[in-house]
Length: 107
Image 1 (tube, rainbow, N blue to C red):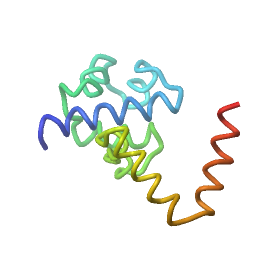
Image 2 (tube, rainbow, N blue to C red; image 1 turned 90 degrees about the vertical axis):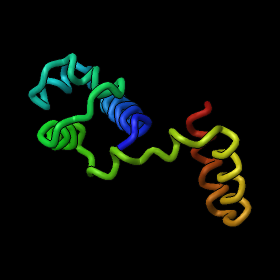
Image 3 (cartoon, rainbow, N blue to C red; image 1 turned 135 degrees about the horizontal axis):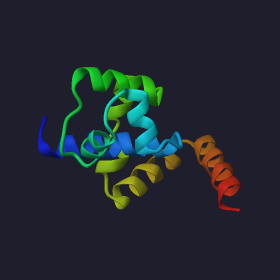
């Protein structure tokens, strides 16, 4: 893995941890490692060991591949917009569904 991959993996772990409402301390407790190690992983300084990786998957309740879903993190805002516009142009039902979701959360 490249240094960039290490940083992306760390960001992804942090993103999922935050979505789960977990602190670094709580995640470290669940994974049975020291809190600074969670910080080092999230900041892209360390790769998790195999045992830690398995612990993270269990604690975050994700499939392994979810930790490597970097698409939204590597694309620019313009690339994301263009991808969505293309999808909306191809599928009116998708456009209407996303619009309903947008209206529900934008209020």
